[in-house]
Length: 287
Image (cartoon, rainbow, N blue to C red; front, side, top):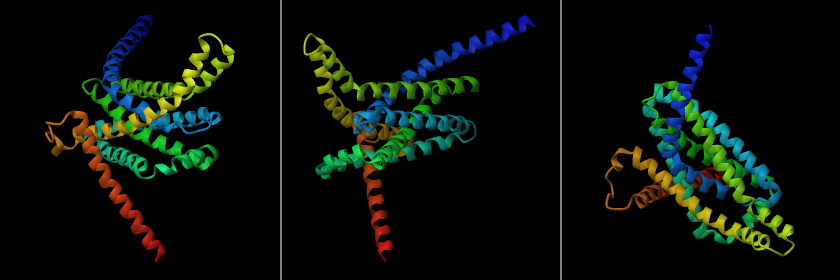
C-alpha cells in the first residue's frame, strides 16, 4: 500500500518536472506576444479617474481569466479532433486585430480633435467605461488565443496531461503577469503623490515622486503607440504564419515591417467592408 502511494507521488513529481521544463520553453516562445499583450492592455486600461482604475482593471482581469477558461479547453479539444480549424480561427482573430489597429490610426489622423471630449466621457459615463472594458476583454480574447496556441504548439509531442498542465499554467501566468504589471503602471501617479506627501518637499523622495507623477502621461502615451504597433505586428504575424500564399511575399522587407504591411492591408479591407455595411444599413433603415 505504502509503495503504491510512493509510486504515485513519484509519478506526480516526474509530471511536474516535465511541466516545468515545457512551461519554460512555452514561456520563451510566448514572450513576444506577452509583451504585445502588455502594451495593448496598458493602453486600454487607462483613461479613467483614479478611483475607478482598480475596479476597471479587476473587471478586465476577470474577463481575461474567463477568456482563458473558454479558450484553453477548446484549443485542446480542437487540437485533438479538428487541428486544421485552429489556423482559421487565428486568421479571423488577425482580421479583428488588424481592423482595430487601422481604426486607431484613422482615429488619431482624422478625429484627434474629439480626444479630450472622449476622455471626459470615460471619466463621467459608466456606459463608456463598460464599453471600454468590453473592448479590452474582446482584444484580450484574441491575444489569448494566440498565446494559448503558441504555448500548445510547443508541447504537441508531449502527452495530453503535460499539454493540459503546461497550457493552463501559461494562461494563468499570462493573465496574472500582464495585468499585475498594468496595475503597477496605471498607479504610478498615486505612488508618486504619496512619496511627495511623505517627503514634505525634502530629500530624494520628493524628486522621485514628482518624476513618477510626470512620467505616467508619457508612459501611457508611449504604450498607446506601442500597443497600436503591437496590434499590427500580432495580426501580421498571424497572417504570415497561417496564410499559405503569403509565405515568401516581400522577403526583401524586414520581418516586422512585412507584418505591419500585411495587417494594414487586412485592416483597411475590413474597415471598408464595415463602413460599407454601416452605410447600407443606415440607408435601409431610413427607407
